[in-house]
Image 1 (tube, rainbow, N blue to C red):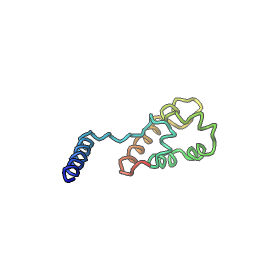
Image 2: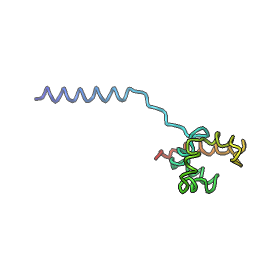
Image 3: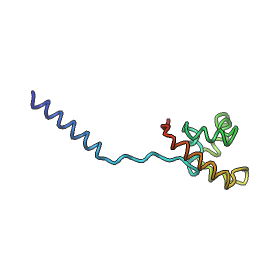
Image 4: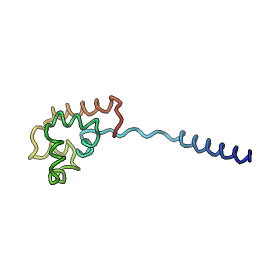
Length: 110
């Protein structure tokens, strides 16, 4: 009996040490090339989008056709769309900085 318990403990330790030996995956960084739907689904970056792009998040929540059109587009993609106004290089630079800062604050992703 004692040998079986010891073998189980050794097996558990071996399994644990092999898991611990695997390198940790770096956290996914969300930015200007991330689909806007992912930016809105992440609580850290959604605050930046809501603050800098008033009504954008609200429209995504209430307008399914709008979501279908742009959900997979990134902010960089939208800035190239002739129908989108206001996503100038300066605004994109500000958004990049704020998105990075929001994620660096240590808040876990939802």
